Length: 433
Image 1 (cartoon, helix red, strand yellow):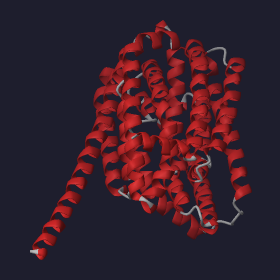
Image 2 (cartoon, one colour; image 1 turned 90 degrees about the vertical axis):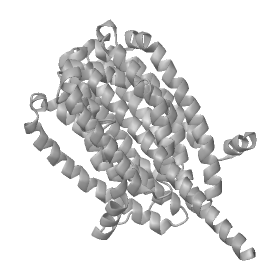
Image 3 (cartoon, rainbow, N blue to C red; image 1 turned 135 degrees about the horizontal axis):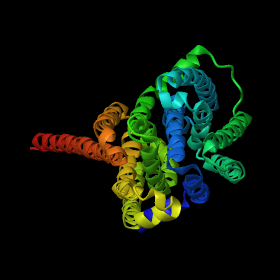
Image 4 (cartoon, helix red, strand yellow; image 1 turned 45 degrees about the vertical axis):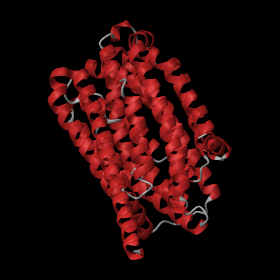
């Protein structure tokens, strides 16, 4: 194991891990500074409204991003030595995202008239829409596939720091809720815009054609299903709760979820940096990929368990410091969500980093879709009565479903391989006899 760790540390992906953790530390500090100010300035209802619009923006981000952060990254990593193929990928993916962005605007306009709370707060809605679409246009997938996350990390840090400074200058009372999302939208526009310019400084511009766009959409379709199903039990929960409960309840849930996600995110840089390397090794060196995956599972499992325990025992202190005593109803919610850093970390290892690089997209999509439907059904049943606690229960049940399904699928696959190997050995022995 020590030899594997030393080998791991010598590889260039460590630079990606370090840069992503540097960006995450900034992203971690920014909410620690801004969230306590915002929840006290906006109140539970105003904070809940912002969270609901952010949830809707996350749905639109999903539509525009279309799973390219997985499928596009995988294709870039697999064709890293083919400039022509990379040019086709960039042209096709960029054009596809532009088309999906247009469709997202139409969807937002329709939903504005269908959902009363969004119709009553148009500025909040459209600021969230712009933030979601701009984030979806980010060329993260290209730089991640190139294993050069330092570029994206630097852009992310600069834009979010600028938005954080704007919070203290522009947000002074609950009516300024829309400005929170407007600042986030400006940060996303800046980061994505600069990222696209840098991408085309490396890749020759190609005029996209329908064939390239359709190819990109076909390649990303399975990952889009994966991400959209996952969205039903991850980023869109505040929006989903807002359909059944008042904004105050959404504020309590969103506050607890924000703290839980801050701890969950500590594992994300490691997982993001390893995904393109595992995708490459799954094709070119499966044995080495297996060793790297086992090492990552050990690190993520131990780290996730430690983070979950910290969140559970420190929940009252975290809520009182970060959200204020008025958010006391968020304490039991946070303790219920404390299991998520461990669960989501292991689910990422089992599904995104093991099953996806092996091309098990179909099985993975069925698992994620099942979890999304389960979360949606449980939310419809539990949220109207139990509000924020009901939503928290739905989320945890969905993650448990993913973990159990992944273990069953991978265990069956391992058993099947062992059975085939035993059969071949027995046949060889019979022939020798």
